[in-house]
Image 1 (tube, one colour):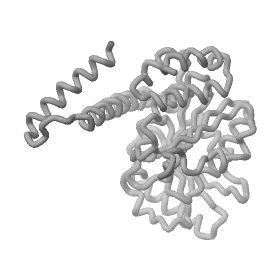
Image 2 (image 1 turned 90 degrees about the vertical axis):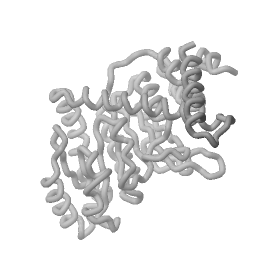
Image 3 (image 1 turned 60 degrees about the horizontal axis):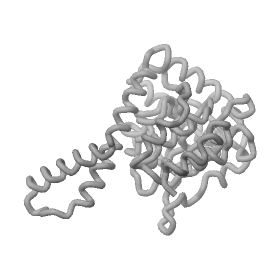
Image 4 (image 1 turned 135 degrees about the vertical axis):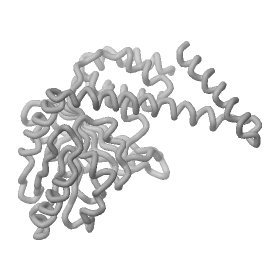
Length: 310
């Protein structure tokens, strides 16, 4: 069945708010990246709502924290969409460990939808279709969209090009030193969570983090430090309250518009790179003459763009 036929078979159910149709629509843009923008252009337009990125190193407790945050937001009556990016399975190419399993306590909430997606080899802690998936979920009418990245390393900062608000989760028992966070992922966060504050080394870790942040303030918005403990169920409410506070500050300072411009530029770049990769991969002409090959590939790229316009 063509993507048009699949789209036509689910669009009315999507508009009426059926979760099954939402899941199908997300799959449709994932499976048809060449037509994703055309599919999205046919969806209902909704007001932009806050996109929250939750990132951090493996083992910091991102999934548990995300689960707690979503539970609180859902109890407030908000409609929450979660995109959980997992490493790809070497065998199926799908998500290796679905976060829906780790977040099983919130999957039964009527106003929560969790989508596990595979990174499929994409670098940066996300997946190639992340912009398209966010657009589909925004069209569905969620109040907040939360993206949990793959366990991210120091340079995996793609979430900064997608989310409005970024939360970096750290753990005092991870072996990470503050020195490691002085560049890369440390610089993109709006809020920092020291998780597992029930551990004895948590207070020292948090003090060192605050001292480090005092030396580096580049964002127009104020960066915040939070302490949380899943064991003691502490600190979650503070972050939930801060989400709205931070989003309002982005609107009032004009920084939200700056971040949306940054997002759109990155999205266009990602789309063009994907098309370029496709053209280069399929090029079977003379490759020894690099200048000739480059010009030929550029001409093929222009043809590809013309095909999209048709």
